[in-house]
View 1 (cartoon, rainbow, N blue to C red):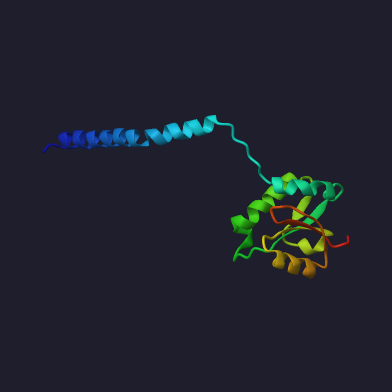
View 2 (view 1 turned 90 degrees about the vertical axis):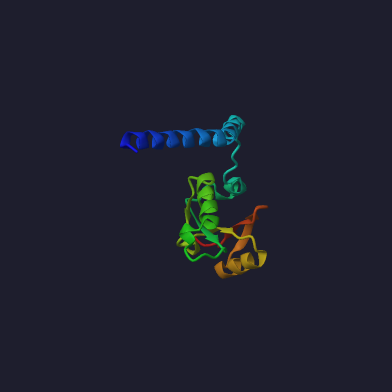
Length: 142
């Protein structure tokens, strides 16, 4: 078989694969376009909004999570809420590394027993608590 014939057959197979794939993916494409046309409401970090009144004149606050991870700085369950809190509570700066050095500490903890243990460790009182297991603690020291 001459090389030109093989190239034409190969090109035909590639074109057939592209067309077939287009027919297979068409419903997903239409679904994605319809999804983009709907009103998208994002509620990023809204669980931290209730802490704003308590942090009006605060420049820095600590941030603690009772969730455990081998590498907390890369764990989505820890860092996503931290970044959302940083966004919502801006201009307050949140310190993840030295949280225990600040008067106010935001605690992300779904387990009430662990939250009480962290509260005791920080020697802090609860100022506010959201429904999404976000606690604002006051250590009473500047």
